Length: 256
Image (cartoon, rainbow, N blue to C red):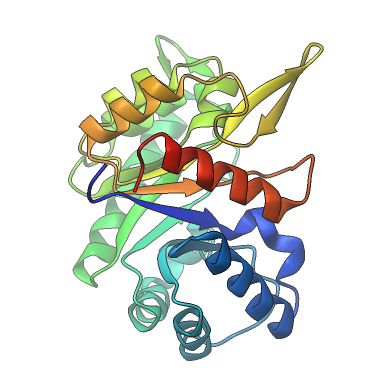
């Protein structure tokens, strides 16, 4: 699929980023697999923006998106985040879920409006905002799930999605249907498979589980997905091996 890029979500490798030396070696291994881009998340080593830019460049990597701060930090200090991202050359920031206890439809409507305000502020500074889902957003409040409320009530020109295929399925929804619903608002897709051991669900390498990858990737192409970001929160083998399996399987499926 021309124009698409496979990236590695560094959260998968969080245990291998605790020191500068660890992070440099991890970036090297990621690049050796064939990845050209990463999402920065849960990095243990403390690097300035300039140092991060240099380390990425030394390994031929770009940063497509970050989970650099939570929503509170993003709302309270957008200037700092815009400057950090400008230096490392990244146009996207995503928040990985919402920590507050949103327990009613109006809570979620309020968050959708607040996210829109924050996203518009960031856009004025050259930074784009996306929301990353887990499965709790598929709880229903009245006739709508929280996720439906968020994307129906937020500004479609400024609040985008970093959809996670595993968590959508974990929440009892269809990844293909949601990719279709978010067409035009979905530049970033977390690709993660689901497998079963007995009655329990487990995360798996892309193509090694039960999700409908033919349908997912066809829908993603039609929806305008630019970044296919491999994430596996927990791995049953070496995480680098898991990232390599997912990368190679995506290549075989036609992602360039």
